[in-house]
Image 1 (cartoon, one colour):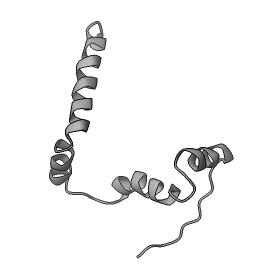
Image 2 (image 1 turned 90 degrees about the vertical axis):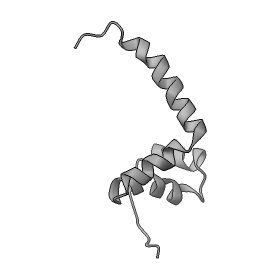
Image 3 (image 1 turned 45 degrees about the vertical axis):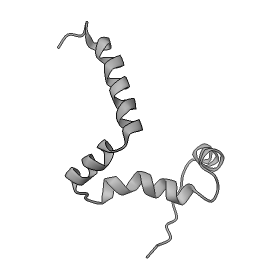
Length: 76
């Protein structure tokens, strides 16, 4: 069951959502962003699902390998 929610946001943010996401897709976009923060998920299942996304895993590996060199001169 869906519920209607009225929120107030900055005009520039609204225009950005309308332009980038599209006028008929804003609700789903916001729901997708909020859902993991308000609903408990089975973390094991979530990690397995993420690991099956080969493109995401390849991007994460590239990012990790690229940024590890950034920390070579860092002090603790």
